[in-house]
Each structure stands twice: as C-alpha cells, then as structure tokens.
Length: 388
Image 1 (cartoon, rainbow, N blue to C red):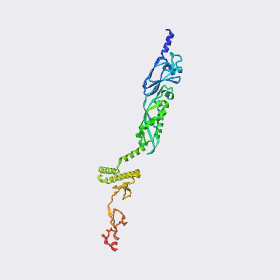
Image 2 (image 1 turned 45 degrees about the vertical axis):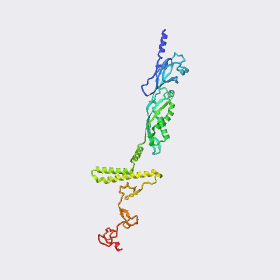
Image 3 (image 1 turned 180 degrees about the horizontal axis):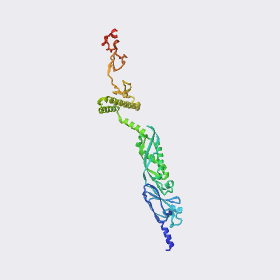
C-alpha cells in the first residue's frame, strides 16, 4: 500500500464513529450531536435509545427521523438524504449533516401559576379575584415540528428555555376555561379534576403547533381573596351553630363559668347572664330572619314574635330576655284597678276597659289610696269617692 493510500485511509477512518447521546441532565429537550466538521461517513453507527428520536438535518432541511434502535447510516437507510444529494460523491465519501437528538420522554412536575389575580363574576359573591397554581407534564410529540418552530439551530435546548412562554399560554387558557365553565367559587375545590381536563384540551390546541403535548395538567389550588374567605368562614360558622335556642343556652353556660372564675364571685353573674342572653337573642333573631327570607312562600308561617316590654324590640316567642337590651321578657300579671282584667306589671292603661291604672292619691298628703277607699290612711282626709 502506497503512502497516499494510507493517508486516504486515515482521513476516511476519522469519520467512522458511533453517534449516540446519554442524557444526564433530566431537563434537556434537544441536543445537537457534535460531529467533526459536520461530516458523517457512510457506515457510521447510530444508536437511538428509548424515549429518544434522532433527526438528521441536511443543508438546513429536516431529512430523516430515526426512532429507537441501532442503525448503520448508508444510502439504504437514508432514502431522503439520498434524494437530497448527500451521497452524490458515492457511498465511500462523507456527508455533511447535523444530528439532533430529541428527548421524547415526559417532563414532569413543571410548575405554573397566575402572576396576577383573575377577575371573574361569581353567582354567590359577585365579582371575585382568583389566584391559582399547579403542575403539568410535557413531552415532544412531533420532533420535526419542534425543531422547525421552537428549537431552531440551538445546540442545547432545555425546559427552562420555553417555560415562561408555556406558562403565559397556560394562564391565558386557564382564565378562558374558568369563564366558560362558570363554576361557583364555593364549588371550585370539588371540580379541580374536571377543570384540569378541560384546560389540558384547550392548551394542547396551542401546543400542537410547537410539536409539544401536555400529557397531564393538575390544578393544586384556586384561592379567593382574604375578605371572601372570611365571609365563607362566617357562613360556615353560622351553619355550624344550628339551633339558635341551644346557642343561647351555650352562651348562658359560658357566662356562668366566667362569673365563677371572677374574683368578685357572683357580682358579675347578672351582667354575664344578661350579655349571654342578649347575644343569644340577637343570634336567634338573625336566624329567624334568615329562615323567613329563605323559606319564601313555602314557609309562610314564621315564628311568632313578642315585643320587649322595655324597648319594644320584637323577640321570638318564649324568649326570656330581650335580644336588643337584655331586659326580662316575662312580667308579673296585675289586675286592672277598675275591671280586674289581667295586665302586665307597669301597664298604664287597661287593654279591656281603657281605664288609667294610676292609683288615686290623697289631695291633702298625696299618699296612694287603695281602690274604693273613702278616707286617707295617712291623714284621714275624706276622699273624692266618699264625697260622691
């Protein structure tokens, strides 16, 4: 063998290589294999592992796509390259081509979230602002499309390089989906799975143009503003109270316990009981009003009410203390000074005969006179009754 033959053989052997890629990063989507002067000799070995795809790009154009397996790169295995003229100098000459390895595995635990609140109209709370976050899984569905539309000529493309663009698309579709689904804010937590499925379908409509596919989409939390959450907590507390009368008894028991713990002993008992019954009465009235508003025509027979003898506030029948002023609702019955009908203590006029209930007084000493008395028991002055 002559010296020129040896030089030619050495020059050809430098292009004989094994083309393969082992990903040790975990987040690399695309990797361009470094080929010396972009020349690949006919007969080179190409190894494509599972969850990989090898894409040959010849003169800026995607030529052949190789799925997992072992290949010998020659004219028979690369029909598209042959048509493009990669082997126009014969199968013993190197061809100039770029080899891109595309990672087709699922990239999991990618995070998304709303940078700003989403304004929505809710049936219960009116206009509300919602924030949400979650995770999703992504994979390359069309390697050729991904190289053309996204990666371009990048030698190393990772999930971080497209993460922000994907998040913006996700938030846009998330807002649109929530508006279309019209799920009440109180029912959102029970619909996370359905919301995630609906949003994944809408997102894939956009991602398919990039050669990407969202395989999983999770909504981890949708939060309401603090003031709306406080309103929800209050509503839940009211529902947990249940029977208003039992709540009043509970308040009275708390007042007794607090009075027993005070240093003054029973000194604060009356005040504690009054406060307990007052708050309990207010809660009873509140529940009564809510029940009357929600019952509508189906509950026309509402609870009877009785006016407070002190302030006139209407209270539920059977209430012992006024929910507004704390005064005692039960009063002592006294007879009318004229007809004898039963009246509440302190009544100024009889509800039966209309007579004034003020007792007669002695004209001389102003002492109160009993009904029918003819002489004052204090000074002995003759009364008007006796004169008549």
